[in-house]
Amino acid sequence: MIYIKTDEEIEKMRKAGQITGDVLKLVEDNIKIGMTTKEVDKLAHDYITACGAKPSFLGLYGFPAATCISVNEEVVHGFPSDRIIKDGDIVSVDVGAYINGYHGDAARTFMMGNVAPRTQKLVEVTRECFFKAVETVMIGAALGDIGHAVQSHAESNGFSVVRDMVGHGIGRHVHEDPSVPNFGKAGVGVRLRRNMCIAVEPMINMGGYEVVIDGWKCVTKDGLPSAHYENTIALTENGVEILTL
Image (cartoon, helix red, strand yellow):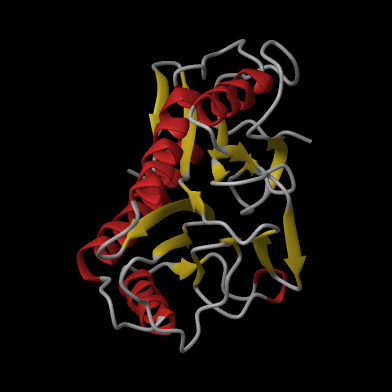
């Protein structure tokens, strides 16, 4: 069931979104080669709690950390650990904040040091895919328009779209209906309505779209890099509002 928010609920989601976006800005300013992914997670956890919020992911379905941190061929849901971030790595950080009964959810992929040119292009195109998708979001548009926009842009640049993981509705729960695939046909699927809130999150692979899920962690089947870019958005009477920038 798709839960349409009230204006008051969206106002509460703005606060959750602001904290979530600010966490990623903090990570961007502080992540560096030689850190462990566990140290990055602590940075995010401490900021969220200092804001009076709770990490959305901590304990969600039993997840043990505040952030999902996925490196190189890891697509999503990587555990923070003692793994050391190295020159040339790409590091995807996915985080959520919960406050006043509502969640925000966002992700970025950070390039560390001397990243290979094709990998740089992957990260850039993944970000572009999100904004191509946002251009399609309007009252009466179809969910398939979002997926078609992401898939078209990714594939036109020689990359592929993960099929096994998708975006989602968001609000009182991190994961709500509807599912928001990053692939599909324009004009097909659920129609977007005023005050719908969704997390749009392109997950784009350098090689094939196939992935392997090992417990929590999702990795590319061919071992090539993957990038992730996500924001929580609200469709209001004034148009699209990105809550986590």
